[in-house]
Image 1 (cartoon, rainbow, N blue to C red):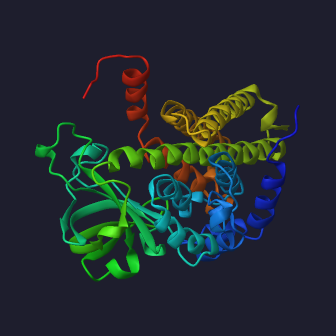
Image 2 (cartoon, rainbow, N blue to C red):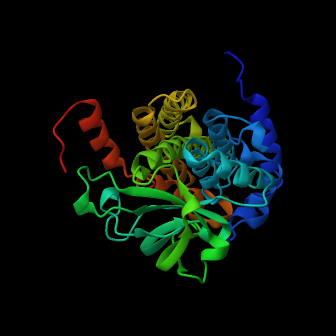
Amino acid sequence: MSPDPHDDLRRALRDLCARFPAAYHRQASYPVEFVDALTKAGWLAAMIPTDYGGAGLGLTEASVIMEEINRSGANAGHCHGQMYNLGTLLRHGSEAQKRHYLPKIATGELRLQAMAVTEPTTGSDTTKLKTTAVRQGDRYVVNGQKVWISRVRHSDLMILLARTTPLREVTRKADGLSIFLVDLGHAMGHGMTVKPIANMVNHETSEVFFDNLEIPAENLIGEEGEGFRYIFDGLNAERALIAAECIGDGHWFVEKVTAYAKQRVVFDRPIGQNQGVQFPIARAYVNIEAASLMRFKACAQFDAREDCAAAANMAKLLAADASWEAANACIQFHGGFGFASEYDVERKFRETRLYQVAPISTNLILSYVAVHILGLPRSF
């Protein structure tokens, strides 16, 4: 077997994650100390070029970071936003914007953890979003609502997608959307309010309301009206990173249940001796390894600035399915102990279930493959 080219990266992540035991991650609050430790060690600035104070790594390395966080028993959902949000700023921001923001993000002085795209009435139908940004002199005035906006209460900056040209005035429904960088310190209480959403996986997420929020025109990223195209750079990166997190979860489940199956004795034999236990665990492991290869393909294409949409979507689907398969085997073979908080299986089980639904549902990925890869008629 050839050596893992990311072995040093993995060992360093494991050393940091080991400082935070399983009991720490059972808390119901946002893991501030854990995210701060990752930030101070430079892991969340991995994709920032060295010219701006970062490590200059690619999405491939970022995916390994996310994988190892989840494999350690933690949840990268508390901090992964900065990785894919950076791509939007890096690829489409002006030089002035990058010079102003990236060095501060690299040091941890600023956090870019939030992205506001999803809305309560449109969901995945992004082109029909209703949040508007109207140009008035040197400012845009924003009105509307977003939902499921994670980490906004633990971020200084937020990527916002809003409609700058009414849908009725564009020839293509994907036109007329624009991206802005929102200074949350200024926005909170000055036209923007946040309402937390309690949820089953302890993701720090919220509803966000805009009531005549003013954003300086200089905070527009790229060209007005091109935001839909820009945002998918970030979303493709997000899907590859989520795939990596699922792979990390999958390995956690397999390692956890394998160790338990070796030592748990029932009817005078370890349960791991039974093929009915062995085969589901082995199948989950095989599928995790296969999903990992698709993840690395998507990341390599992204880093080479090639179209990675197909690979990123397929990686996310394969990895989410593999982690869910591993989660089911893990909880099943732990029996009643799988539901006990002290074993952490039920927590990780809840966390990995999310990825069948978000950030893009399994069915939407299948629809994408059917229409955009196989050429079947569009269903919606």
